[in-house]
Length: 221
Image 1 (cartoon, rainbow, N blue to C red):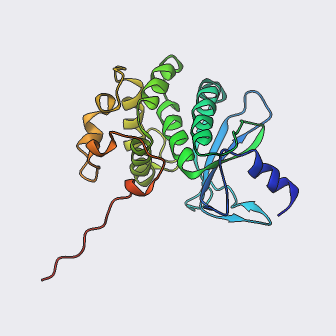
Image 2 (spheres, one colour):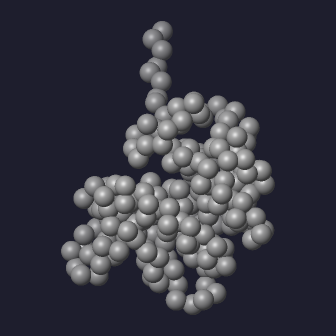
Image 3 (cartoon, one colour):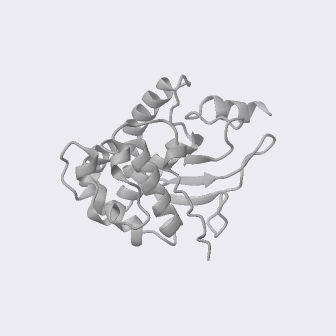
């Protein structure tokens, strides 16, 4: 692996290709007004790095959101702080947002995208509310909401402002902040037929395995 890729991994938010090659890339351009692109990558090559970024239908490398710079700036410090607290508990090196490509481990990338989806079309004045509500969700809730939203309306360009993406915005920016995760989750999510049992999320864990829905075995005729 060349020095450039090693530096990207060293400065990342917990990404380790030996652990999982699934990751996200936050591309921060040098220009002060240029938008930030966040893409999801399912593969990693030790010689070339992340899979190519795509705005098409390809899942590997697909752009999940294009965020205005002013909105990115409004969440950058909070996400850096929260992610580094998590990484510290995991015994990992802290990350920092830098100009260029920023690698983010898959769990944190899902959580970042949930917040980005919530504010992409929101009034900037509502972003503090979105941050507080996002902080009120435990990681498992964020992962589940990301999974449902990505499956239904996950394309960064074509699905903007539609379906689950729109519901996420309402959920995090227009609900009152009441100080606990269950109260801020709207009925839209709680009643979803494929949703988890929210009582399972009384305590936060760092493992993502518990959030994966189990497939039912086919009934014998």
